[in-house]
Image (cartoon, rainbow, N blue to C red; front, side):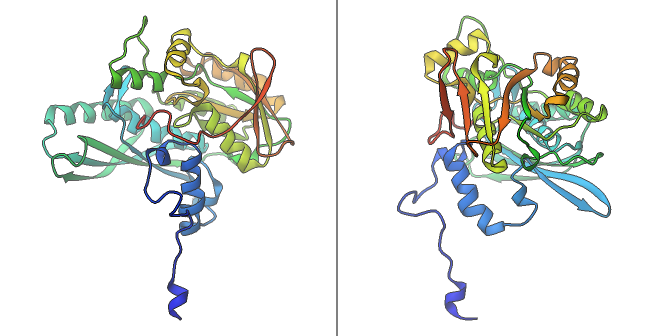
Length: 350
């Protein structure tokens, strides 16, 4: 083997981004570039190529879903949740988006020297309660401690394994023209709750995160045999980024109606004051389901019966052209292209 064969070139132009930016972790265009130009070429394989919230795997005749996520939210505690509930619910929900029944989680803790034990216990207690509510077990873990001033208190990583108990392939690649897009409820609360806690903002009414496990509605859909083409939770980058990622992966066009998207008035007002577009604001208890039009009524009836998705509704449709794009009809009837954010709207939101 020659020396030249061992030479590697960074696929992201160094002159363009010589250093990592906060926006590389924001779920927008730079996150997409980091994944597509660096991680996928380096680690590319069939499972990674699914471009989903987790990998769907087969092992010994069993169909499994496997996912991992890291949590760096600041502040650690916010209205409606904390880093512990996020760490459990986020990974549980990613498994559910693969169509799997969540079973087991691991937890890795990066602790900063000087962190109060009472703070750590609050987080651990939240994780225990969240795991019990989601019906999963934390079965293994790891702990590391970094120097004082080098870790911002506490970071958590969780990985999860779930079992796929059906024959459906629930993934962006399964989306078809004629499908409809269902949204499980109002959007934007998690991002606004964290932002208010971080910046010490107060609004006329308290905004709490929507952080919740999505076990009940997703498993109910699967148990009823409803045909589902794709599921996606609306975390970093919000509704908009999730739709764009699916449209690009599926090579199809998704059109949504702004008037159909539920947004609480206090969240809408906070977004207007701060200059945010609600469809890009993070959620931790909301998801979209893309289903055939013939399955939409049955799916909505099941979703509306669950407290966490009681306000589910149809917000859009899938067509062939323009392929890879998302468009939105505004409240005044105009149509605009919805794209990934090029910068960071709300850093360290999860």
